[in-house]
Length: 446
Image 1 (cartoon, helix red, strand yellow):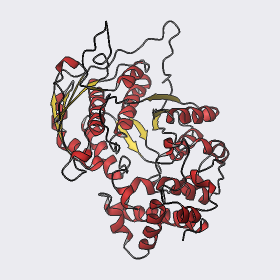
Image 2 (tube, one colour; image 1 turned 30 degrees about the vertical axis):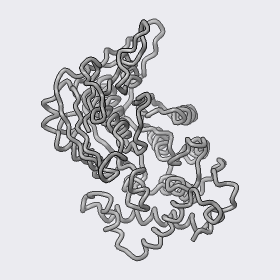
Image 3 (cartoon, helix red, strand yellow; image 1 turned 45 degrees about the vertical axis):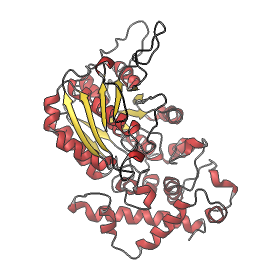
Image 4 (cartoon, one colour; image 1 turned 135 degrees about the horizontal axis):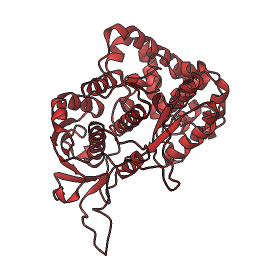
């Protein structure tokens, strides 16, 4: 399947069953003007982030802009090229044509980029780079009451999703005197939670926020629901923010923190569903290692760090530097993989079980009501409800299996890991399993 991504829609070919055309950073191709709509065969992506960058008040480099363009182009491909149409129902062969400012350096790094994305999405990627790409937007100036994002004095960047892990990360950073720029991929629902948490922790210290979304729009176009690469935009937004913070504060290099517990980060095949189409590998150490190498090759001067790589979610809760603040915001955090369906966390998907196990481990109570709350325990839910029981049963089977096989080999099924750290990866995986096991015993499932 071929996908073409351009800022100027007049350069895009007509879309057909083998071609997807996407306008990036603009929607003028699909906006009706004087009764005329220029194109009705294309999708759009990236307009909100293009506008958000202007509020940084800094001109970003062509190379940073190129990485953002690539990440959005990848998200467009992931969104509008459907897996169901593939020969095996999963692996897509994607030929991506995208214009960049400096295609020569990206051609040198093409094999590494394609390898990283194949690991992330399970697809075969082939990039075709050419020149005359979208230039960085001209930054806004603080005139006529216009407010820019305040970057003065900031010393790091951190991903901030509104989940429990990222909330603990921010609390810990602020408690340690760090001054982060928080990066949020703000979709409807997520944005509200993120804003509420940010408001609560404002008293903890100094931070600023860059929040936006990729906003892929294709009227009448079928979308792929897996979206395994969407979180690549998270890292691209973070890189944009890091570049701006470096420029304003004259930092030589900067840390981008990716707060994720090590158990989830490893993405070991706990269940078939969680290692398959609905799973993400964005924080897996091997993927982070490849993206770090890419950033190094391009001279970006940033370090990708997961400070919780060898901690479980429960250990993160137990060791949070401000337990009182965490108790005040825990109800605002979201872990559920499909909470938007009912605007309520289910309590029985894998992320929900890991969350509830972690809070039990850390003796932290929450007052939210889970979807299955009409049943006294998960065991009663599993016995009486067909829909939603798969993950509970599969995790129970996985826990039994863990007693009989080599955990190192299990962990390595998720991807390459450094040999010198393998014992620590095995330990965090084992500890994570024990947390979930204790929770399921409490719920009388096992």
